[in-house]
Length: 128
Image (cartoon, rainbow, N blue to C red; front, side, top):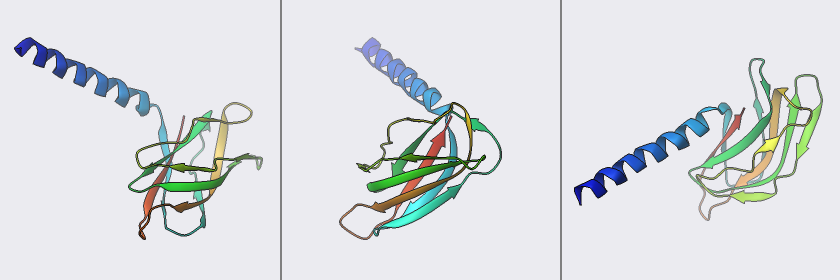
């Protein structure tokens, strides 16, 4: 019985380290708070670094995304249709950036926090 507990503990530690290392490759490039009304928010990305893909994660309360527009340093942009309700603790699909590795200047969202009561959700953008 003791060996079963030890094996379970080892499995838990390994699973947690694999999940952490898989997420560690992503940089948090911006955070915003979403309210319970439709709003447009822009995250300005500082510094110069080329990224290949992004994902958006939601914390505390669900958020209903309507649209996302990624503006690159050279002035070009990529319109991303999300149109989905993301539950707290979940992320959007991984979004590949057009043209390979790109320097992101800003990301504009149209969204609203989607709970019954007036709450505020946290929205984080990750890139790698």
